[in-house]
Length: 78
Image 1 (cartoon, rainbow, N blue to C red):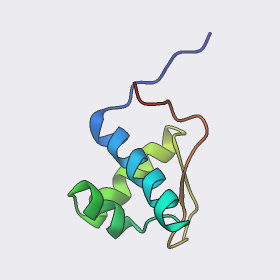
Image 2 (cartoon, rainbow, N blue to C red; image 1 turned 135 degrees about the horizontal axis):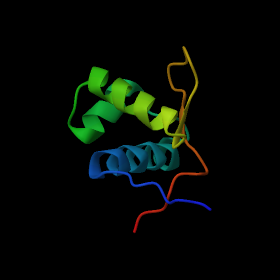
Image 3 (cartoon, one colour; image 1 turned 60 degrees about the horizontal axis):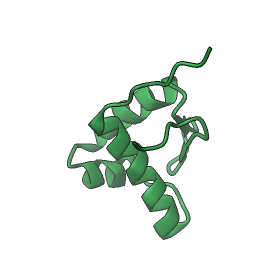
Image 4 (spheres, rainbow, N blue to C red; image 1 turned 180 degrees about the vertical axis):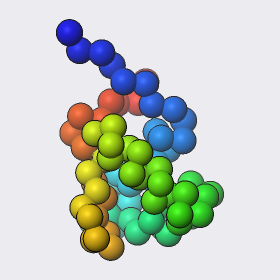
């Protein structure tokens, strides 16, 4: 039985920001760019990306400057 994961507003905003950056520029945002988009520091964006990656919602390539991608399993908005 599949349980739909709840993601909070900040997590949803982060996934939306990563997806929007991919659509606009064809590449992943840096942690600093993600932080600016969310109004948080690059360190906070890094920690948020790690949390989303552990939840399986974001793919983060280790030691890659622009290595974030929204996972296919990320729940849709709504």
